[in-house]
Length: 214
Image (cartoon, rainbow, N blue to C red; front, side, top):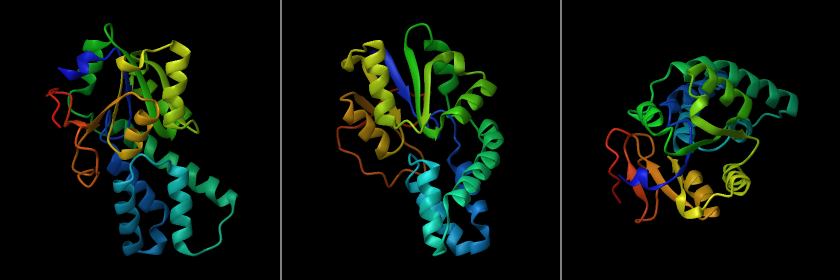
């Protein structure tokens, strides 16, 4: 099993630990519902194709799409509203199959980190409520980038690069791994079938069947 070959594993959260991508897509649509169904469908499609981007960048983009003038106060208001909409729904969303069992089984043999684009405080609260914080040495979220979060962990803990693995579901996760010269595995699901990755990237559908394919 390839996952057993690495001592240190960095996990993205949405789409890797929790099946929470659609929860957040619906929340983005809710923020802009006054602009109509077609507008909201474009938001849905953009979010599902760009799962690893931060909510702030997405909300800024969707604000631009409206053609209206917005200020930072309105941006902050929408970001806060989004957080209120998603937290409980993320907690209630399904686990990626097998991930919880994997964390429990390997917690004494491997060292785990979360590297996410979600706000760090919110993510830490979610992990606490899910009772999974104990499995992770560090939980990183925005405003720290994924590249920097991995780099900080490597430097702080003096990790060997060939013992490190990033598991993500979008190209920004692969790029963060590449920027730090560590291995990457793509977790595939129905919403990232359009993601173009190099032919040598290994793919896993879930944590129940841990054999990896190219």
